[in-house]
Image (cartoon, rainbow, N blue to C red):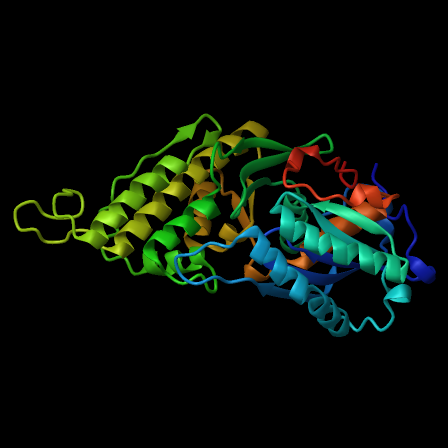
Length: 386
């Protein structure tokens, strides 16, 4: 039995308020969330329906020029420059006049992520905690995505497909852990798309993956896919070979290498494949791999629900392919959120952190606030679920 009302709200209120800070990659997010106390939350598992109210959800992105990625040092500098301003904006938007009295807890991303950006944000979290005398909660970034997705979509117990710039995992809940059924063996899908975008030298704003999606939508030869490697190994998948292969095709296309029979007609020298064709084929290939391993996980745990979380989860084509698979499996259902919650944000850290706080999980010593680049999803004890 789970009692989400283990810890009483501050000052005898009938609700909890949490501040969440996220900065594991190039997105700096600050969010404030509110949970009312509900009697039914003292018995049973209601962690997917906390009646959460999002009071603010502010985000700022560190963007680099086309063809360039983001370095940890420069990203950390961006977070240090913007963190205080974003916290002030988030509190003002949430109408938090006195954080000492109004906030129950401050939640921050412990990991996984880039070391320097994580460190910049946890310094801000520690400072606010000491300044306002408010307890801290350390949150796993992946669990933050899952809990925000569950709260927004009200999905009870789905198979989770977590797809982002740094992670690609198929997850299912069992016995107080989010168990990883399958994952990438090398690079994450978001990283694969981002690196191909660099090869194409397309803009990084609003995001490289989004711009690849727009190019793929313009493909005029959708019935003639460019053949790419398809690497599924049991429940796992590999994308580094696919990236290397399509990178070589793109470079030959830009050079006008007419010896490449895939890209040019050998007799006439006419170009057969466009950049849009490459983007579409890459998406279709990668997403088909994701759908395959997700379907296998659904069969294993006997569920008809899929929840897609992470930045790549915004991709409409991925949602369409997953929805088609679920429909073919006894009218299953796909749950997904929009860019406010798919892309890294502070309110997802606040949501997961507040669930932990309500179960009594708080930092007791600042030594426990050390961030880490490696923090697997299945390391977290999920005390707020049955």
